[in-house]
Image 1 (tube, one colour):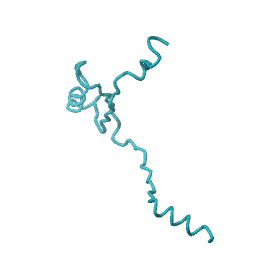
Image 2: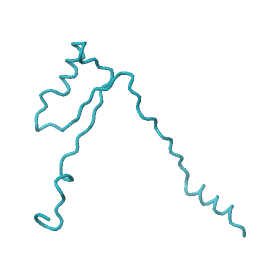
Image 3: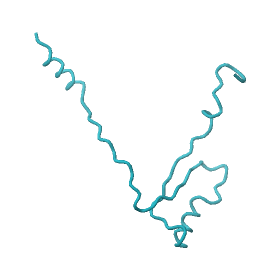
Image 4: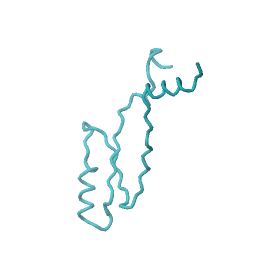
Length: 86
């Protein structure tokens, strides 16, 4: 272990990169779309926030959101009380 006992490995010390997906851009056959793509990802200086850009097709299927069933403490507590015979 280099340095002190409490030093974090370099993998944990790097700046996280934000991920931005651009959908529906045809960067190969459409010059305007290519200019938009270049404006986002070209010439990003080192002093700016690191961002990872990716072009996704217009028909890309995003994962479906899972609905979270939220139950309050009161609901759970009342179920427990009903299930226990007195």
